[in-house]
Length: 126
Image (cartoon, rainbow, N blue to C red; front, top):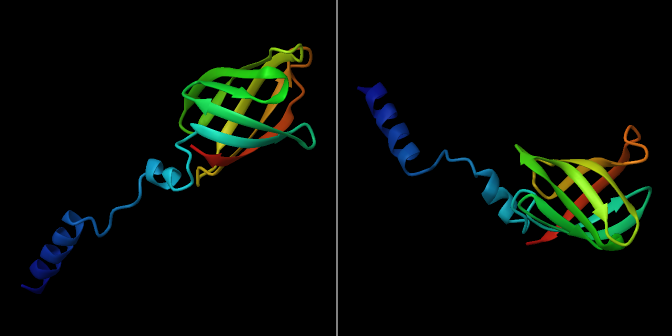
């Protein structure tokens, strides 16, 4: 009889959500970002700071009218960047942190595709 009571109590607690873990979206929403979607302050190339906005698979950043276009999958955003003001182009690869508050990654110019340069970001909000 004692086992049935514990099982019943456990089932009731489970049904009420006592053991529910927060979803990744809920964890990210407290920081203001939802996955990669949001506004970011990014640092790259040894200290250059820019503002970035990402929505879906597209993004913009403040340096030389930069744009991002890519694909997202399970906390990874990768694709190509282009600087509209003559700064060039290349590819990038970002990994979202477990908290969703930051990402780390790299970019490489089209002229030197095998040279990866650090690019990281911190969420500023939605």
